[in-house]
Length: 435
Image 1 (cartoon, helix red, strand yellow):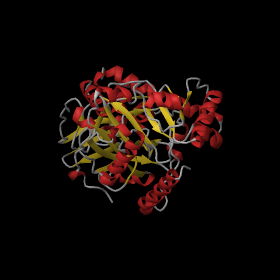
Image 2: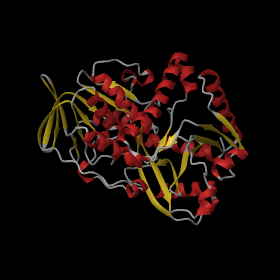
Image 3: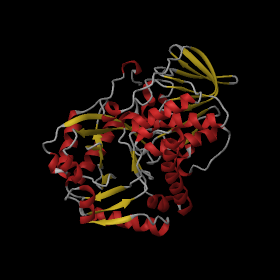
Image 4: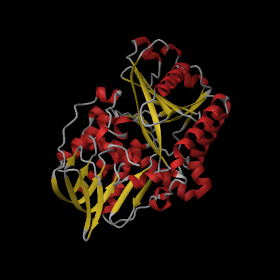
């Protein structure tokens, strides 16, 4: 079953309120010719368009709403060189060579964000590479984080990882509830919607057609290529790229990919601006932060506001219960925020996969895709555009565990939502009892 793309709600996010003005793009009307038609104007689609055009080929980008409406404009703006599956787990299950390749891809992804920001001069993205702290809520999770950090240093040569004691995490966060943590210096933060709009503007200025409010309602093969049909037009191309991630069910043309994904709603809140003395006390280093609980929360300071987010929201729309739970968790970590009003509340869909990693490659000889970023997609989706361009050129890059041939459909797909609720409830219970 597909959602109604004609009734897509707007997003009341901090990013939307503070972003550079959105550029208007035309609605597709009539017929266009291209080497590649790209479905989705998020980070994946726009990065792919940039790299394909740089290869001397002609892409066209089609967006169901406006660029940045989906996950690329709703996320927390956290940039990390990681997957939901740890490198140690990859090593244990798939061997050292695979772990090293995945490590290379992860770090290439954060560099790609920096490269694109520089390439298009997106100063309003406010990119930082100040690092991320994983803050442990008990001794068990602290030991696991330290063991992981030591393994990364020993086996992956990641000498930058640094262990923090309780005082170190208190100095980093301004919170007294954590027992210690681990600092990963290569991570960072960004204004995700300004980054997205800067990409779209830069790609368009270099001659790539972008069409908004032009959902692809049908994708059909022809003798010499593929046709993407929209309500008012069509693009004839040699190849197509599906870059719709957790919003793949907006139309029937891409809905088949949704059976490989588990959409998980991620919610965020942002406070009003804090008074100077409080803003200087909380998260003074400007890093991003996560905690070690299974239902992981993350937080960061942007423009003297605390942004606090996490998993656990369910359903098709924003959930007041999820926002209330986030506020409660935020005040539990930062009691000084108890009387600070929330200014913004929003949510979006994260695309989870069975094996906890994204997948990229070919659906068939004319159709490519990249989906399933598992909540760590700002950097990774930016990088996947480069690799999609390589596939378009006929190359076969080594994608490690991300190889499309490893992708599995979700078993008992109609039961995915109750299954997610059940697993999330169990994780919440384990977190509550300190396990």
